[in-house]
Image (cartoon, rainbow, N blue to C red; front, side, top):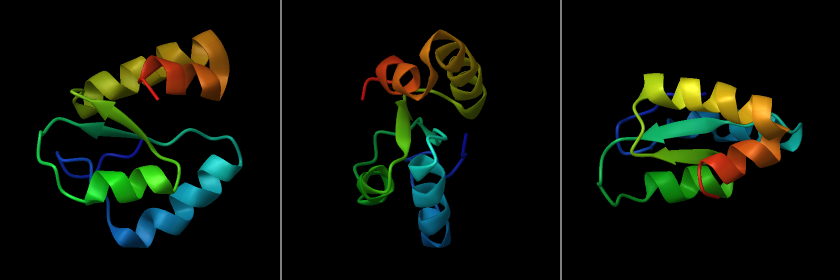
Length: 82
């Protein structure tokens, strides 16, 4: 799990790392607690990150563990709705 800002943005320097991790079937989950509609979350999703809408960092970590136990990466995407 990657904790960025509350609106789901992460530093652009991490985009390559996120893309590499997701290409190796390692889910990268970014919690989003804000309703700010900035461009950041859309860009992070384009490189493969999964948004945990409405989750705090702590909640997203717990949900990620449950989702991984239930079905791997596809289970994580399903759990977080995409």
